[in-house]
Structure formats: structure tokens, C-alpha cells
Length: 343
Ligand SMILES: [Zn+2]
Ligand SMILES: [Zn+2]
Image 1: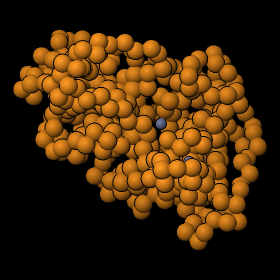
Image 2: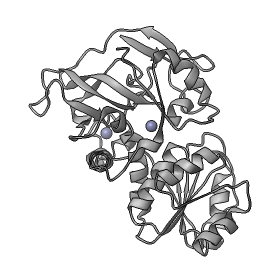
Image 3: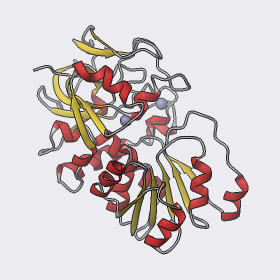
Image 4: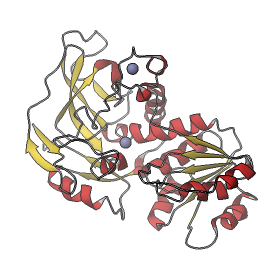
């Protein structure tokens, strides 16, 4: 089968013929229809803490069709089923986190596309226990947004956000947009997205933001107060570069909360006194639970969430390597989907 293979930091992804995955007793073999390119995939191919080994096939945001089932797969599944899968391969027995559905914290977890072979490929195998059927009416293309949307769903859940909350989202990449969507969906009063790029601000408005501001135009605190009457109750950091924590602490109201979901692999520094003086709550959020996926799939299928503005490009293998490198300095892209089938 055709797949994109990581060849070490500094090299473009290599499109190659590789062996199809062999199906183990509990696996489904999936013919991949769409796979999203994620910011994490970019981090995983740069020098730093998250880099994956040479030979890795990336890709964890996918949909496809079941084409083969392992001998022990139960009667819930059939060849031809349309599916996605939670890209978390936890052991389910090491301790509390696995049993509570937080397999992402399992020390034995091997994430799909970051250890386990991913879906920048024509076929991927998944443990049937991690597969989720696409509900009736949900297409492969829209279904491929379930993973980044599940991140936003988890962030808002983890924030314990109450109806009427005034929210500020920093950054309008896929995760910022996803957070804005679920803040709005969960009853936020103001959902303001701060973003430098005009096309991304427009996309934020299409994905549920009630306002979008340009941090270059004037002071963000003043712009936010002009809209919401005061500082935000909840700031959601979706950029992931050094300096953001201090900025968020400065922006949030006294006794407000900062949710951190940007992936920052560099050293950060800020003055703790600023957070102490405000009694700020700093909370990180990682990934999702299977339940986040289930809810998101339902909301997508019933058209209560529209993922269309997220998806800006659909490409094939011929364009993947170049587009992947280009995404390191994003311009007009938001979510780029790979369509690995050539027919
Ligand atoms: Zn992702
Ligand atoms: Zn475990």
C-alpha cells in the first residue's frame, strides 16, 4: 500500500510502498478515506521532546471503511462499516486512568500515528475496542474532524464552564476554533477569539465565536472589555509558544481560569506573583476521553455542529510532503485533509 513515511528531522515525508498492516485477532483493518494533518504531527517531526522514530507513519484523525476483521472481533462490526477510532491504545488494566476512560494517561499507551502506525496510508489497523461507527448521515470528510473537535469538547468539559461565562480564546487554529465552537455550544455569553490572521478571524466567527479581535490592532484587554464589559472569566490558550502563560494570566479576570491546550515544547517563564495576586486557576487539558468522541460524532451527524469552516484543503499523496512542510509556517490553511486513495 501507499503511505507517507517519516525519514528523520529535516527531511520531507517520503511517499512509499509499504506492507499493509497485518490484522491481529482484535483488530479491524480500515481502508482510510480521509486523514487530517494535525499540529501535533508537525511537532512530532521537529527536533524536541515529541519527535517520533524514523519510519513512523503519522496520522491520527481519520475515517474509513472496515475491510477486514480479526478472528476475535465480535458481532458489533461488519465489513463495510464506516468508522473512525480514538487514537489512544491504552492497556485498560494498569490502573485507574485506563479504567476511567483516560487511557491517554496510561503509561502503556501507544498513540496512533506517534508509535502505532498511523493513517497517512491507504490502510490502518485499529483495535476494535477503539473504533467508533460514524452515525447515519455523517460523511467521511466531516467525520475526520471528530478528533480535533473532541479536543475542544474535552477542554470545555475540563474547564467546568458554566452558562454565561465570558471566554477569550487565543489563537484560531483548529484547536482554537474547536474550543470556540464548544464554548458557544455550552452556553458561553461572549466567545471572543484573538488572532493575527484575518482569514482565521473570519473562520472563528463561522465556527461559533461571537467576536474576533486582532491583537495587533490595539490592546487585547481593552478590545475585550469593549465587547464584554470587563476581563474574561475563562482564557483558553491555543498557541503554544513561550510567553503565553504570562499573557493569559494578565488577561484573565481575578479568580478566573486559564485553560492551556497549546503544545509548547520550549521553556516557558512567567512571574508567578501575577497569578498569585489574582488567584488564577491554571489548568491543562490533554486529548480526550472516548465519550468526547461519541458526543462530537452525534453533534456532527445531527448537524448541531458544522465543521465545514475548519476544512480548508483536501490533498492527495502527491501534494502531501510539500504541504506538510508548508504548514510549519501556516498561511491560509486550517485543517488540511489527506485523501490517501488514488481512485
Ligand atoms: Zn490531532
Ligand atoms: Zn493502562
